[in-house]
Image (cartoon, rainbow, N blue to C red; front, side):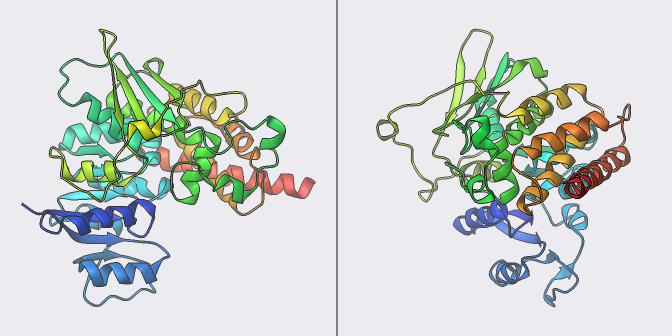
Length: 376
C-alpha cells in the first residue's frame, strides 16, 4: 500500500530531505500535500515534481492545479495517511494539535510543540489514537532501541556533539560571530536549530521532548557530549545493559525510519558506518557553566506549567535577534533566563494559555533587547 504524505515545511532542511526519501520509494510513498513559507520558488519546483493535491503557501503564490488550504487543514485531510511536521519553531504547534486531534500518524521533526505543550498533546493523542513517530535523530535512536522491549528503561542518555564551541573559554564565547555559530561540525541544519545546538539549548529541549515521548522523569534522562555524532542516543535497562543506535550523522535515516516503520527499507543512498575508519568514540559530561541554556531548559522542564513554552519562545526570539546582529551569542542565554524569571505561570494550562505564554515571551525578549540597545 502506498503511504500518502503531507509534508509541512517542505522547503526547509528536514522537508527537502523528506522529499529525497520519497523520491527513492515512489512505489511506497506519495505526496498529497505540501506546505511552505517564503521559499515559493522551491515550492513551485516541488509541486511540479510531486503533483500534490493540497498546498499551503503565502497568498501571493499561485498554483492553479492544487487546492489551497491552511497547514492545519492539510494535516487533518482524509487523503493524508502520515503528516510530516517539519515547520520550525512555535509556528508548528497549531498544525501538531490539528493532526493529533484528527488521530493522524505524525512524523514529528519539530521539538518546540512537544516541549511547549507536551502534556496537552500526549493527552489528546491518547484520546484520539494519534501516533507520534520521532524524527529527531536522538529520539529516533531511543525509539529504535526500545523496539521489542517489554520492560521500561531505567535511563535514557541523549548524545550531543557539543557544537562548534565545545572547547571555547567564556571569553571566546563572548566573541562568537553568526558565521561561527552556523558552522556546525557534524550536521547540516537550518539556522535556528544550528544556533540552538551551539548554545546546547537544543539538547535541553530534547530532554523535555524525551520526557513526554517516553514517559520518564527528568531524573532518568541524561546528556553526554559525543563529538563524533556516531552514537545518537543510548538506553539503559534494569540489568545494566545499554543499547545504542549508531550511524553516520545523516537525517535521512531517521526520516526514512519514521516513514517506513515497522519495516526497514533498503536504501543504498544512505551512508554506511565504518567503525575501523571511525577509530574512536569519545564521551564527556556537558559544561553547564559555559553553556547555561542546558541547565535553564532542564529547570523549565521540571517546573512544567507554561515555563517550557516560555523557554522555547524566548529562545526562538533570542536567536532571531542574534541572527539579526542585535544581541551577542552569550546574550541568548541571558534573554531566556530573564524571560523565565519574569514569567508568571498558568497552573494546568490549556492550549490557549500556552499560545499566550509564547506571545508574551517573544514580546518580552524583544522589548528587553530594545531597552538595552537604547541604554547603551
